[in-house]
Image (cartoon, rainbow, N blue to C red; front, side, top):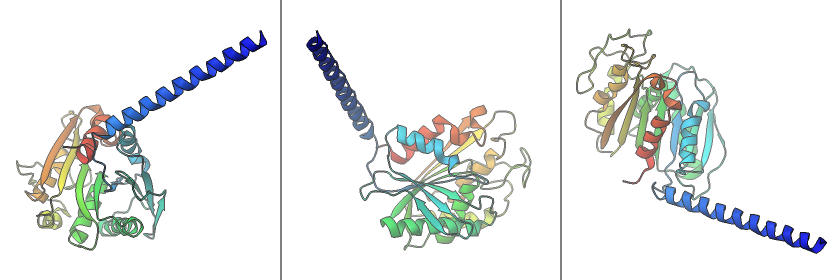
Length: 287
């Protein structure tokens, strides 16, 4: 009887082992199938939060990219109040579609030139560590204005990594509600030209020339609560849509995408699965 139980136990172990192997192989196959839908590049994508935000603001979007098997390579770049950059994590030399989550210690810094310098410092750090030549950008809220200032100041510096694709979410390009704009005060025409230009919008109009001829693709995402404010509750649609006029016909590809309803609220946009999926497809899906 004892031998019989031993044989039964061995048989159960064999069955369980076989099931584990089959499940593992199936998961590996599914991962491979999903991965073939995306490019297998080494261009890093940098995510930048908005005013008062942190790397946590980027967590949902990055997690969606991981869940869709776009990448398994994610690190965080911390920028101190003094502008010093520390990388948490490490990319392998053959890292596929690596992602860098940025976190600014001084996350309420209103000096755009200082913010732009900090963003440049992250790129220089990545360039030194990984020899990167180009990058993608994803920004939320004021992070987009920081990046616009970066491109204005450093966008023509050929010694730096060059922008390939950018995704703007709830961009504050021409103001913020209840700060320098009231509800439904400013409109944009079909070209994205605003009826009034708030600082530093006029200074950013040089972006059209900086982007020209560089084959940069742009996805501009914004939210409308559908409550009559034509805004996401914090940023007007006109402020976000005014990016179109700043860039003109210079990008290789420019697309606007409006989300509607409660899930299109300003801070909910970076927690919105549809938004995450759209930016993932835009950045990495094969044509």
